[in-house]
Length: 565
Image 1: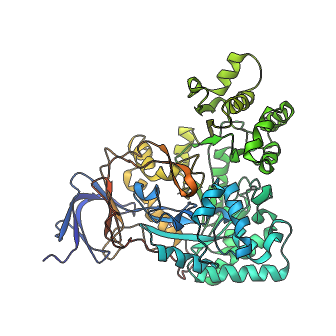
Image 2 (image 1 turned 180 degrees about the vertical axis):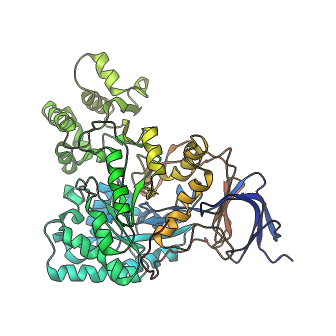
Image 3 (image 1 turned 45 degrees about the vertical axis):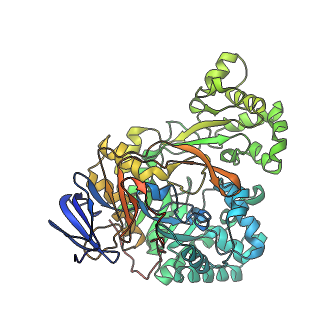
């Protein structure tokens, strides 16, 4: 009888360190890699001839906090070779939460992360209050892949201050209590602390999110708890206000990652050029800051609904819609004075202006002949009115059932290539679990390796795999993301030549009949193992027959300050 449970035979091992690929077999026993050698035997064999054997991918920027409570498979991520995710980004964790604060916390998630309120109400069972209790609740339910998260500023602030979290600075006593909550969360397993300082997100009831009401000193005092406990890292959604993080990190002594550097067309109002941000970032790192700017290979493209135009709620005219029932919003879209105000705000330069030339009709029951067409072209044909008038007119004709596709940013191939290659630029911003009716960027790993590493040759495959695995694990301080004897047996077997994220489609499979975009048929992803247990076999999901899902909770452990490569 073989000493190994599984032998992955005949593949080319890309081990996640960035080192050279090599032909080798991989032996697995008891959820760990036992050997990587020329010849390995196993009770079960996986034929990887002509394929790559890589560590399971890690996704550092997700918002699966609610979804994990009803979807232990953590789809679509687990369909794309991801074996570990980090939730609670941007200050938006689901815990801690007192019973009286649950409604406002879900309301903020609905507003900021475009999570349907009815789905959240139906899908989240509140058998927890503190952050450690939340992680225990996830563990009880079980997950197909490993799950961890940051404790979020908005949740912590609301837990301590209640509704006042939306209105005023904290007192000294409240700040002390918040620091204690963060410390308890980190000691209970949180992978770090996160906050949103971007400045434009509106939360429950159209109010500014609590983390933006906080003074800067509060943000830094809460982040400092990671250093005091020796646990976790810090994530900040900075928006354009990113300059302060470099000096702060040098004082903090813990790794810090911020969201994000994206490419925008030259002259885009309210956004600095990506090259200037990258130069600032590199200067900060040269000065000794262990700061990681998140980047993505995905264009910032969304399908938006006129019934729930959450992408535009930061504009004052659209913020007025928050208080208007969806059934009555047609009256607003018909109001020519409101249209004029909204158009003036779109073009004022104070807010991110969607690139109207990229907006196309994605779905229109009343006018299927317009699907795929540009709203600017339609406006030109009509000979009067703006592109926004086309959106409003079609909304009325369709009784708000239409959808549009818009690209905001990050579609400059040359610029994105520069960012992907940038020193200290971390693959992130998939936003998996958020904006699910608008985007499906959980496909980032398969998209990056196929379209960017293989097809565009932006970097060697060894470096590309490292950026999705070992680099992220190093920043997080996790013993993951690398293949070596003794390592956790989280790995994927790829037909690299055939690899593709596959098509995206719209389904209704969320609680309370909620809809989302998914990509459930990637090509070339033949096998995925989590803790040595196959969750994907011969290109198809393999979790249905498992007695127990193999995922675990990724918990922080005390680590010294360090710079990670």
